Structures are given as structure tokens and as C-alpha cells.
Length: 336
Image (tube, rainbow, N blue to C red; front, top):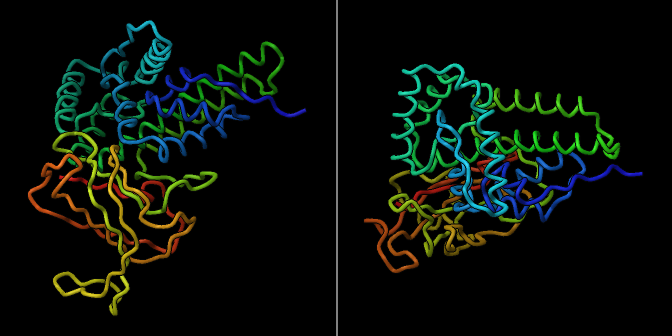
């Protein structure tokens, strides 16, 4: 007799991650036979299916660190998700709040305001087990980041929070099944799983952005890009994007020297309404090592308005002959 799979509703996934697209995609691939299976699916959905707007929606579901989590006043099913999320946020910030002083809370409030003014979204961090001083130090450390870099860091932190909440959710589900003697996982084992996962996520917050993701299949080309117009705080649609690979006589292009004939065209597309490029190359599991160039025509957007003083700019990507880490799979670029 096989292991009973765990059924999870959309609003429960929404409590784990405030992105509606994330919750809907998770329902599509559920049920799950284990927490580990759910986490693998969640990583794939978050980094490969959820767009820029979905990331921002998830960020906005969080209260500022140091503030009392808010609850929804709506009567829809999302109200339950918001209530659960607020309860979990309070627990995740318990260490920070218990170690806070009047001075540290004041500093945190001021830095939160500066952060939001610069980046346009609240400071996202997996706060479980972290003191106020540790969180404040991390905020100050990340504040100098360029907006697009910080956007990626925040997405990684959101995934840590989502994993921790999925563990809590599945622990609760395990208790329900254990009560009816239908689920063959001991309650103590599930509680230990939550504790171990929480400790792992807290420790990994100091690591650099990016961990290897093991998705069942690739749904996009190895090289793609999102374009954000940070002057407007929204995705940039209708931007022409060209992808080329270096095939010149020299090992690499030399700055300031003519590179005529050195670049070989690979593909082109225009960004959609989410700022996501189309297919720039074939969908393959492994990409040939080399130096790639992505060029952006930022002079005219889909709406026909000029978004940058200059007509175009390029970036270079170096692909090494090794398995790519999460975060290197997609190159994020600012439109302006």
C-alpha cells in the first residue's frame, strides 16, 4: 500500500508565499508524497514560473521587520491565508522582538524606511532565530546593493521563508493524519524536521545567493533575462533583446578594440508585459561554455516612449563548464 499523498489547498500555499501565481502553480502540481517533494516543486515554481509581479506580490505580503504583522479584513478565502501568514510572521520575528531595545527598534524603523524608499519593497529576510541586531546588520550590509541585485537577494530570502512555512504546514498536516492513523509519519519526526529545516535556513542566510536547484525538467532556455524599469518600478515590455556568442580569433573580446566578425548571432526576442524575454536559444539541459553577449535596445519601449537616454547597452555573461547554480541561470538587467 503506497504512502498517502498530502492534499494542500490554494489558500494554504498562499499563507506560505503571498504570490497568487505561486499558490495556483503549487496546486496544479500537488498532491505531494513528502515535504521534500513539495520543497523541490516550490523552488521550481518560484524561480521558473512566478514572474516579477508575483515576486513583488509575495514581498508585499510581509510586514516590515520589527512591526506587528497585519491581518486582512477581507471576507474571501485569502483572509484565512493572511491570518495564518501573520501568525507565522509573528513567530518568525519572536527572537528579534524579544531581543529588541527602544534604540534598536528606532534604528530598524529608520533603515526600513530608507530601504523601502530605495528599492520599492519591504526588506525581506528569513528572520527565524535572528536577533534585532543581526537583522539590522544584514539590512545595512544589503542596502548598498544595486536594485536588481537586491531584488534577487530578496527572492532568495523569500524562498527560505516559504520552505520554513511549508515545513510548518506539513507538520500540521501530519498531525491531522496521525490522529486518524492514516499518515505513516510520526509526529515527533515531523516536528524534528521543522526544527532542522529552520536551523538550516537561519545558518544559510550568511551564504552567498544561490543554491543548486533540481527541477524535474527545464521549461525555459538556459539564458533568459528579465528587464525592469527601475525608474518606474515595473517590468519593461517591448524591449528588443539580442543574444550572441563570442567566436573571434582571440579567447575573449578586448575592450576598446574592434570585434567585427567575432560575435555570432544566437537569437532575438522582445520582452513581454512581465519584462521577460522570449526564447533566445534552444531549450537544452546544458549550455556550451563560452562568452555570451546580450544587447538591449532600451531606446523605445512597447508603449513607444523613451525609457533611457542611450539607445542600447550590452552585458557579457561567462558560462563555465560546470553545473550552473541557481541565480546564474537567469541574468537580470536594469532597463534604466
